Image (cartoon, rainbow, N blue to C red; front, side, top):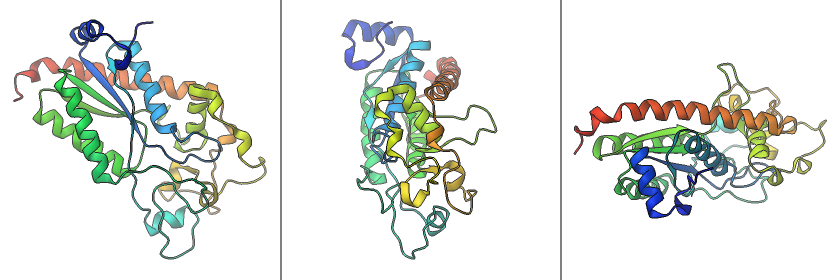
Length: 272
């Protein structure tokens, strides 16, 4: 299989691929708590696996993963949905008080500066399309990535596309979340040895978000259950399900990239 990783490519290989299909992928995600059963690099590792899959499928070069991301303090409404009753509690992202280790979150403005500089380095290498493959769903992360993608697309010779590594398998898919069944399954497929389900309690013990820092996506939307427990249980995860999510991300992003690449030619002459 051809090399798609920038750090492993010789100059001639890089120039040839850039001439053939001038697309660069940048996987992004923070080092973040994902329950006691998952590695801290879950988000960037997911993004990296999907980015490499896309490059191997349709072409392009994958730049070294940016292990960096941001989070905001939870609102009182969000904390209530997560099962907290204390007033004036301050929780950033998924760093609930019960966690024994903190996540490595960057302030939103610092994350924006770091991502901006990395994008500048890639654009200066002459890639026509840059694809940010994001593994983290925080609102600040999404807003920053989308803002920079628009800014670079309108103010540089390159087009920048902001995408998400994990996407729904079908319209009604409710399994997405944080360290729940979907992310656990993806990590089991990508690097199975890094997942240890025995670190979670026995099946009869419900997983409360405020105790474990694990949550369903619906919970963040205020649509979780009254007990504030995880319904999409990570203990039900399988590598087979994880493969479906990875392959789904690869296919969906491949379609986005090919569509965006097909539109590049008429736009090239309109940029400064």
